[in-house]
Length: 340
Image (tube, rainbow, N blue to C red):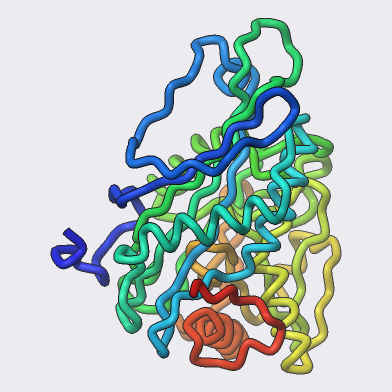
């Protein structure tokens, strides 16, 4: 079947692979890792995941390198982040070692689905944890299922690495100020669907959310973090309602490596007038350059890319990170895990 896959034209969607891996938490402990060929799970109708939103997930990728080796990018950081998500909504945290072992196992079991080097495609890895205890009272589950599925996904930029336009809307908040924004819970994404649908119908690639409390500062950019280049500095919002992006963390480090000053701080909306480059960053795209930002409510347009091209610093950071993931650039920070 993999012979028939048109790697370069795959969408960001679900394609069946050979195996997923699962582990159950029961009687106060995690059990053995199980490999399964089933694409479904058996879940009780009263499971806490279905009634009280006890559901968290992660997203990371495996890449076939220039040397033919398969690399997973920064899996320990995803392991740490899912622990924070679990604690945030009172779920049982997955130990880092168990998470990493299961990622390595599921990639090995599905190695024929890791796209070839040069295709621009990758193997997307989706860890998921749900509360499975049957109960109708509002309290945390006592039992959990942790599973990892994988699926090959095509290159994010099918038409080349080009800027897109995004919009600011004040009628929607993605999360509450002290809510679940800093954890990767499904409810955050459910809350963004209507705003995202409206933005897409108006021709924009994403919504640039403002902080939910005062509506004065830049927050998240759709399902991704936002960063901008201003006067040679890398600036990105500091906010307790933003998911700490592993891609953003990596880009900040690469910026420092290049001698670029990094500022994590509140970015007032008015400051968009003075930025030279901007992008949304996350696992799917690495960095998706922004051409224009339209404020739907005020009618103001912030033209970020004057010539319609991605900025030089954004491009350099994007190329550097992709190079590390593909084994083309030296991995000086030890971010990759090579699957032997």
